[in-house]
Image (tube, rainbow, N blue to C red; front, side):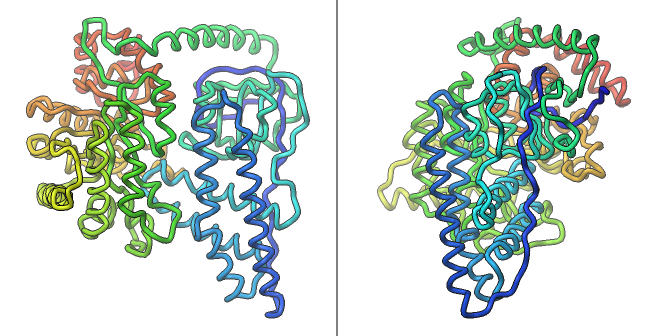
Length: 574
């Protein structure tokens, strides 16, 4: 009997094939109290389990096929980094000793504490990284319990199989390297999960957050995966199959056409040139940016140098990471965002939780409150500017006094480098993120005093509409087309035009081809997005006329009813 499941479409395209179920059961961990005489033995058992997983992951790392997406080794490196961090490799041992508990229980307690911290992070992308912690912990617990460290799956010579899993880690995906799948679907995950990013890199249709697909779908059952609409159809009849076969063929043809655009200049039909940059979080992500044909990095998140560790990264460690990216981009712009963490996640003991972490001591507020921390990062970024076209991006600016303090800190960092005789680019450009309504309303003042602006639409929408899109009870109210959001974006772009300063968008709106013409019509000329979205956005740019887009965008800006806005947007994209 046919049925339809709805989830989140994280990688576009259509796949039709038999379901291939990956076994996965949530691990139940028992709690028992140890006698003191057995504590040393338990500590040794824990260390051995961590070492076993470390060896397994290192072995998998060496087995990654040469043609695998660049993100795959990067994600596995991140899992190794999480495993090696003292928060997981050492902290549970203290729990074993102080609580006299078994290793599985201590590790689970530590994991839940870390997950709770991640849940309070405002940035949706960073919040999703809790999944990586859980996946690493589960591998260690499996070893402690004597379970296999991989998801069992029968060998299958067919390449049209659709992998159905509760969740997938990068290590799981490497373990499946002998098989090719037409699509991935999972109960867990979201648009920023590593599985989703890998699916997009592989150009494999994928739907996630299906909640109970693993329990509803039978082995070898024919299913359709529609990654564009987040739909999975079970046991479709012949009429539905025929319709989707036709759509699948059209998608394949379109996908092949996109690859040809890599070397094309991004310009509209009437000759307006648009900059298309990539967002990255690790130096290893540069390969994906280069593969996409991007002309720069519009957002290099620096947070991962600071996360999952008990200490702070030093200046040299940060400098090496920034320099690596600057050199790899070979003269193309690299925009490094200064630390965007804080009250939403305790940072090496510097901060504490607050009731409203999104509104607390985070981002530039934290950096200004911790001048030594900020100075170290600024010196590292400035040193990297000697090796490429590095730009500094300041997150969560809200007032001119904050900007003045930031500029003073940058000048002080420059002076200290001069005193130390260390080379850097004295003309390094400094920009501000516009991601709260106050900053958008004051964009003119920021534009006049900075070299460029970058609109972080994810936070701008959240703060404007007072919506936490990770909260299922209100996430349906998260609306990029809300008139207030569009007005703030348009206001910021106009402020940049008036001051003669470039403005970009680096939030998810930049990577949505359905919004490319709208933003173009509002005057945007620089987009930064996940590399996997870049060619689709470029295609939309190449087929657009900026004058016509501006006229249609003007009509949308005058609209207020959601249905009418959707109709106007469809007309703009026709």
